[in-house]
Image (cartoon, rainbow over the protein chains, first blue to last red):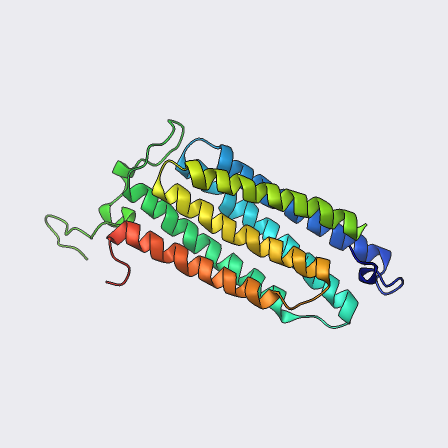
Length: 138
Length: 89
């Protein structure tokens, strides 16, 4: 860590403490997300870790980075907020698509996992919509 | 204090990347591997942000934004391929 990062007096102790706290919290959340993905038993459980904990962790880290450059340069920057917004918008979409593809491939799951693929309509697991026998589709 | 926090966070993110690599290697099914790759994209964005803090420069955030976009697009493309057998119908 170079010393120019801390040009004494530019950054107050409170701001530095908040940035450090956000950084460590983000690191812990990212670690917990990947631990869940490496450790849990079936795919539907493993989907929980990266989609929630990792997204929160990367949000914490990007906000810490934004606060740091704001306090060093004196003006806020939009790029970190842009990355945070983009990740928070796209994480649920990719999680939904991954869950649909897992249901489509009918992956094996633990007994405690609820919502069997047979309970879902074919179009919910990615198959082509089938017309209803007496009414027709739609 | 900030440098100690940066060291701790770097260690945690690198351990998270190693666990992603483990899941990517052994992952029993295709969606597992796609999920591991998606998480690796997000964790490498975290690593780039930490590199920007370490070097005290904002040069690398454009690449972080680029990696975020490419990761999302590739995940969606592979999921569409798994679901439909085709990406653009």
